[in-house]
Structures are given as C-alpha cells and as structure tokens.
Length: 296
Image 1 (cartoon, rainbow, N blue to C red):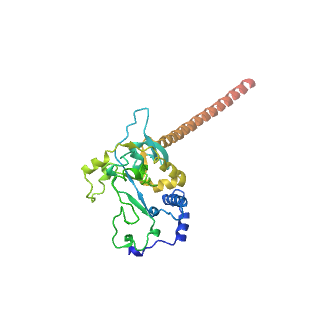
Image 2 (cartoon, rainbow, N blue to C red):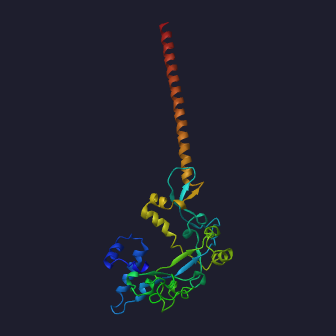
Image 3 (cartoon, rainbow, N blue to C red):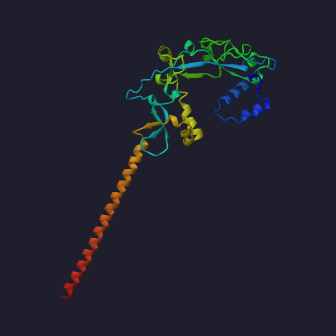
C-alpha cells in the first residue's frame, strides 16, 4: 500500500506550503532549502536535501538550583488562581513547578554524547524515485529509510558536527530535535515499554554538560501572543498551573473585601442619614418650643 502513496504534484504542494502559518517548522524548512538551492549552480544540485538528518539532543532531569533568595530560576506558565473564576494568565513561575517538559528541564548531553542516539530524518518524498528501496514493502530503517539518499546514522551525531557544524564535510543540520527524558514518574508512565528500567533512567537522566541558553523558553509567550490567551488556555488546558496565592485569588478576595467595605460604608451612610433625620426632628422641636415661648 505504501508504494502507491505518491506525493501531490509540485504545483499543488507549493500552494499548500503557502497556507502554512508563519510559525510552521515545515514552512521555515522549505524556505531554508529553497534559499540554499538558489545559491547552488544548476549543474551541481545537492541531492542530500532529499533526506535531511535531524540530530537529537537529550535533556536530562537535573533541576537547576538558582532559587537562593536573590536569583530565581523562572519561566513562563499559564497560571490560574485557586478560588477564582477568572481565566488563566501568562505569568512567570518557578521553573520547578512547570508541567511543560520543554520549559522545566534545561541541562542536556554533549553534542557528541552517544546517549543522544541515532538521528531522525526529514524526507522530500517527491524527489525520491519510484525504484528506491523506500517504496518497497520493507525499508532499511526509520533512521535511514533510503541508503541511497540518506547518510549513515551515527549514535553521536557524527561526532557532534550535525549540531555544531565543526566538520567541514558534515555541515550542521538546519534542525535539531530536543528529546526530554523528564521526571521518573513521567518516564515510567508507559508501562508496556520494555526498554525502560531504573538503571537506564539513571544513565540517561543525569546530564549536566551544558544548560540551554533560554531560546526555547520563548515559545509559550510567543504562542500566547499569536493565538491569544483564551485559545492558548483551551489548547493547553492540561498544563495550567493552579496556585493558591496567585494574584487573581488576592484580587478576588480584595474584590470581596471591597464589597464588604462598600456595604459597611452604605450602613454608615444609613446611620448618618438617620442621625440627620434625628437632627432635623430636634431642630423642629426646638423651633416649636421657641415659638411657644414667644407666644407666652
């Protein structure tokens, strides 16, 4: 069945690309490859663009320890205050309570660490000929579906050059896939995965080669700016952080107190009004008494 699933014609494909949003990774990749091909001579087209290796960078579960009272390690999160009906807000929170893997874990393996494992690939299927092994009933590997158009996979990102580009013959890939091992609880949330055990988790989670510089931290803030807080809250409803002492709760409590104060103020106004009425009655009584004295 697979060999009959041919890609759409070139014109149809180009039209569909134009419909992709500005934040689409596929749109960025297509634009990147088109610009790269324009710099090449007509007779020297680079066929490696048909199969792009995507190196993997593994992030461990080592927590940062910068919360020393002066410097806090924070990131953005969708925050909802307990006890309030107000919608979630985008706020800075302590990184350790973020439920998002990409925002919580910051320390990763070295570029050439074998724990990163083999690369994945992005294939331009339209440019893969019909007689290639990719279209047969069985292909070589998900890491190298076509031995003719895909470079051999390596466990260390080709000595790290696929990420940092320190090899003249192997340029850096335009894409890198961040892999997050996460907490132990999340790691073992797939009980049927026989590859997972505590020893393997310890080996792959204790990574402290370097800390990600903060580029990935921007995505949530920019996503909210792009789609709006309401849409973002619906799409990411499972990742909203409930905080007891959130400002929204304080605001809600403050609103209640303001209402109470207003009611007390209204009561005071009523008391004042009653006193004014009593004062008016006293004035009337005094006027009446004064009139009686004058008659006498």
